[in-house]
Image 1: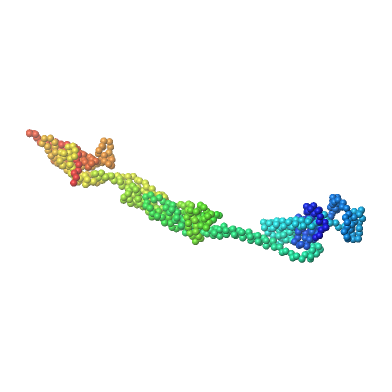
Image 2: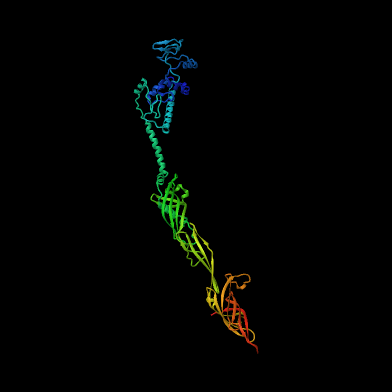
Length: 543
């Protein structure tokens, strides 16, 4: 509007918005309420408010303050049709004397407010619009972060509810007139419920977009997937340590294991998407059967990047997709289903007897020490027991048995050393290997002038005893000394013969012989019965 009072005082007035605010409160307090000043959307109503702010009647205190600080102004030249400044109009056709104060007039003339300038009015309107926008922003935020309003929410007089819905207010005549003069159509504002719905959809859309961008569907699929027996079997069969079994291969041969009877007993999906599986399985080979309990960890292959520790895990396929799995723990109850098959101490002829009920094997180990005249055999019983993991061997009390080689002892012997040359014939016959009994057929010649020859058969018996001090060269490889003795007949003298001997290390026999013979008389006299003695060694003739 054209404002004749728009002067230098506008700069001073523009810094006092509280005055306009007070005027608005006095005139339109019923519309705005007492806490928040917000301009209505109706432009005509805003114009009425602006007019009220410009021409608000001053209070007595305001007038007195104004008069005290405004200097007296000299009378200007009145314009045509104007009332001189020295007089004021109190009523139509009435003039007040210059010396009469307007405050004492019952109907003082209308005076423009101090802030009645277009600059101040525009500033007030901007302040009010800003305050309204701020209040609506706060209410919109509260409606999203607090409880949503219901259809029966109470409308409060003099303000707006959480939906910023305008309340009904008394309609003034000025507002009606302003509405009729306003030719501009009202702008339709978007309902607040639509704004809230859009925000929710935007937030939800952003979440869904992020959900898909971050692999949400694959994660959902992995959380719903189930591990089956085929996946467990695949992981176990790829674990070399597990497939080597739970029993040691001592005393048995190598045999590959076969996996069977895989059964899941429990599967738990953790919060991080991994699946913990407890299962049972059976491992069997030629010698052992193990009933196994296993604990495995699986993650869906689509989520492998979330589990760095599972990068080297075994791959398994099931109807719900591909898995990465690893064996975490395992235990087994193992039984032997076949006996031991080898023992390095018995490289040949090892054939133990297996008792599956007692999980044991029995075997008697025999060791033999051969000598030129026979062999000594030591028999030791062994028991092999399986404790669920390994076969162990224990030895019983050993027994020994010596057997003579009859063919090695029987036959002719020739003199080797000493007086054995006088034993013109030395033959072992009828040797019993089991008892060590034999006979010696001999021929011996006496010494001296006119030697006499005798012959006979001596029955002998072999004996053995552990070698002791003084055994010397008679100690055999088995630690024993083998000796013999016997009595027999002689063809001369009183007819008796005796022999003692010991078996040597090199196939020889050392002996002491005595035999009766008849010594003829020398020139005259009678013959006499004498005994000859021969000591020496003989050795068996070859061929």
